[in-house]
Amino acid sequence: MSVETRRFMRLLVFFDLPVVTKAERRAYTVFRRFLLNDGYDMIQFSVYGRILNGNDAVEKHYKRLVDNLPPEGSVRCLSVTEKQFASMKLLVGLPLFQEKAIKVNQMLLF
Image (cartoon, rainbow, N blue to C red; front, side):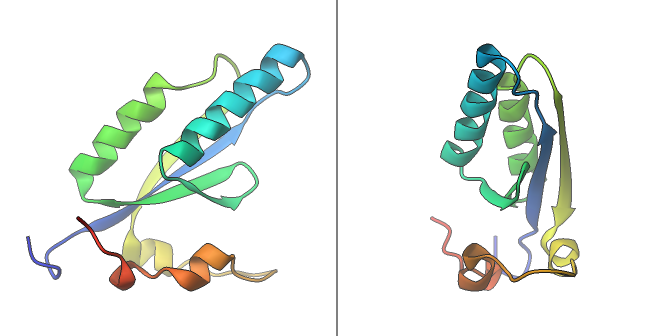
């Protein structure tokens, strides 16, 4: 597949998990570590995202998310194209280091 025909996508995960009891805090930590170990970057607190190559990869990582969901709380995911993600406007604050350092055309896929 050539670079021009690849369809880069972003999978965004939004979550709001309870952290009142010790068990809830542990479930939050386990879920957050899963996201980081699975290649997600933190965009904002409780908003994580990762770049994927096509809809097949989106489905694969969606299933991985479902398999690692915490028992309580609210978890949502959204897949958007890289072009849609790039059109996002930052209204307040500065871009994160990851946003400055890596552009999709700079990525190497093995």
